[in-house]
Length: 517
Ligand code: ADP
Ligand code: ZN
Image (cartoon, rainbow, N blue to C red; front, top):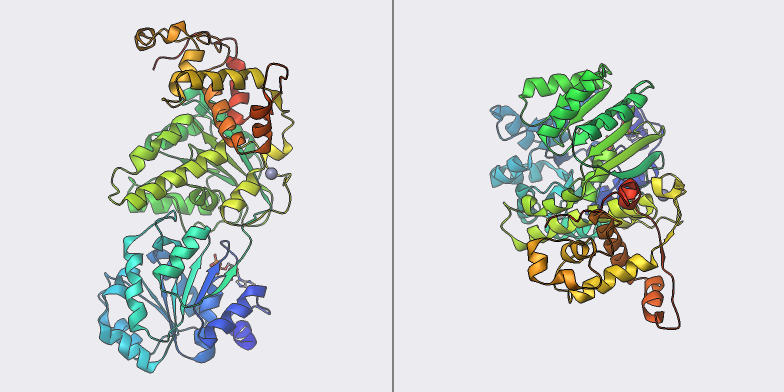
């Protein structure tokens, strides 16, 4: 093993988990490898075929990435090849069947469609592993579900005795279970690395859509581009991409653009310029995705909340690959959280819809958090951060103090109670803000003693408080507050100010008008 590592890859030692993994795979164990991008997962399936001198098959969703891998393996003297669905060269297939390759990459479509004779031939000449890269694609709980991945389990019955290796850079407990179950893995050996990217700073701010915010964003970015390294700005729509790109250009910043409606050539050109540091900023939709392996990205900005924390972790994780301090800012607007309806419109299964909604709600929770973002993010991936504060996120370094929100909490809860909990927060908040809308007058909500008592805060402020109370209802602090309230005793409730409340301070007192429903 050691000499192969040196001879073919030029490395003098394995990373701690790699050695164990390679040994387990050679012993024939099914294995699950959950490690951050760049941690060296591919070596785990690249070494065993060279040690046991049998073919290893690797399935991956990205053709370009597989082709890159094949090229670099060939340069190292390893017999690697790629087999895709559209490939017309049948000699690759027949050479593969006769065991002429060490490592054979395939699209999942191809793996599911080759004739059974292909596998039986390969089995008889020697197949030492079947690896599924980007294995989270198997799970609807992952951020990149692909139906064809689900069909890979058929191969389990065909490839009897061949260890299955699943690899992914991001996986929650649910995704992990899904991978193991879908691939029918037997008692897999599992290696889970830490997801903590200590050099990344995490921060969140809320914003209001419009040109003035885009100008603000451009100013933030321009401060950065004077220093070394590049920035990615992820937008949720192509329209936003174009608007931000236009403003950056106007400000004289060298920016590029990347989205799904551009043709392949224009996308490749944009990507190339960015990789070669000829652009400072890439403004993109999430189409600018897997395979961006640029070490010196110093900043990833999300202009709009991503669909899930898995996605956020992946996308923000593209910065700071070189280990140097880098920052991840997420700008969200409340309407981002209402997009679930839009995301699920083409989904037919109830469980898929549920997964999408829950993923978005976790992302919402991350945005509205007042405690350590890193701890929350890692917790989402099942990893326990050992302290309460990381010292490298906006909430940990913030000097925002908790504020006495007893009066506001009472008002909001009393108002919700007056509405008999029938509505979500919209109506109670509009009552507090003194709405004179016809619907309110008809329902005589304007006669309620609470009507208009909360004019001083915007509706977003009240909703943010509602959100915090929900969270705190589960805590001993809120329980104590609610249960000890009485005529002789007026408990106080101190709550942290979250990002929406801070950003809203300017509007306080200014907004007497209640919002329309
Ligand atoms: P992943 O698949 O986890 O994203 P890769 O397999 O692409 O990671 O490896 C990331 C980088 O780490 C590559 O440049 C690879 O050459 C390097 N690498 C992997 N294993 C070792 C090792 N044992 N020693 C030194 N470098 C390694
Ligand atoms: Zn923190």
